[in-house]
Amino acid sequence: MTATAAPAYLGNPAHVDPEEAFVASLSSCHMLWFLSIAAERGFVVDHYEDHAVGTMARNEAGRRAMTRVVLRPDVAFSGARLPTPDDVHAMHEQAHHECYIANSV
Image 1 (cartoon, rainbow, N blue to C red):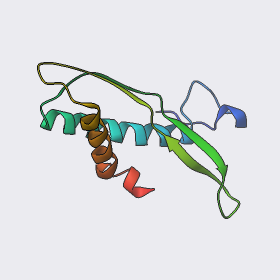
Image 2 (cartoon, rainbow, N blue to C red; image 1 turned 90 degrees about the horizontal axis):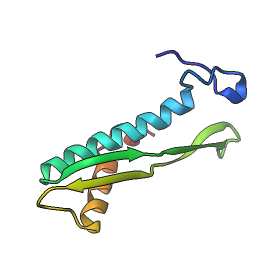
Image 3 (cartoon, rainbow, N blue to C red; image 1 turned 90 degrees about the vertical axis):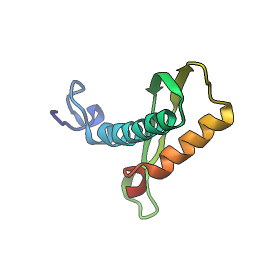
Image 4 (cartoon, rainbow, N blue to C red; image 1 turned 45 degrees about the horizontal axis):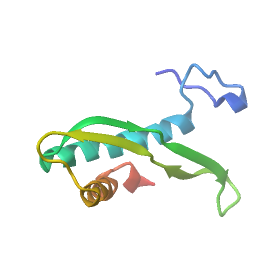
């Protein structure tokens, strides 16, 4: 992987910047935990896509920081046993709790 600064700081948009990688790592960790939890519960995931967004802003100390990351997963299931909306919510909550990247920030 070739890293670069963000395009706003004259980085190469063809390469990943650290902020992008940070958001992707949170999104990927959550996804992998979600998929494993769904499988353990007997649900078949046909599709999982996340359009995660990170926000850069000044933190309480006035320093630039990634102050917020919002995950927006789109998940589709198939099979004889489909999860209820409450099941899906509970799996996302557990994935968030288990994700070691989320637990690190």
